[in-house]
Amino acid sequence: MRLISHNLLSCNIKGVKNGFPLKIEVGEVIQKEVDFNADFLRHMFAKIEWKALVEGARSMGYTELPEDSPDATVLDSADDSFLRKLHHALLELHLEEGALVCPETGRKFPVSKGIPNMLLHEDEV
Image 1 (tube, one colour):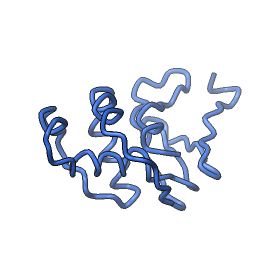
Image 2: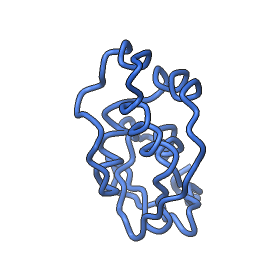
Image 3: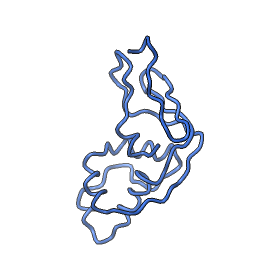
């Protein structure tokens, strides 16, 4: 599971008000190379919840992203080092094994072979 997917997921258990961001419990992280696309990253930047991305990246061992969201002007800079760091965090880091944990209830959703199982139990619907 990539961090770009993690940034879109939340806990949907009935009655949960604070189900985002899901905490990441790491079992295994792998890296898969993906072609760099600066235009895609510029487009996605506005849609990303920055603090959730940084927290997720750090839990997976990647500390190259700044704590605070950079100004959007950095996206158009001739120096693409920030975009490459963002690219690596969003698209190349994969949670292969582990769990996503609801911040409110503590319910763990397992991640196996890179696929999060977000199915709810009958009493959670």
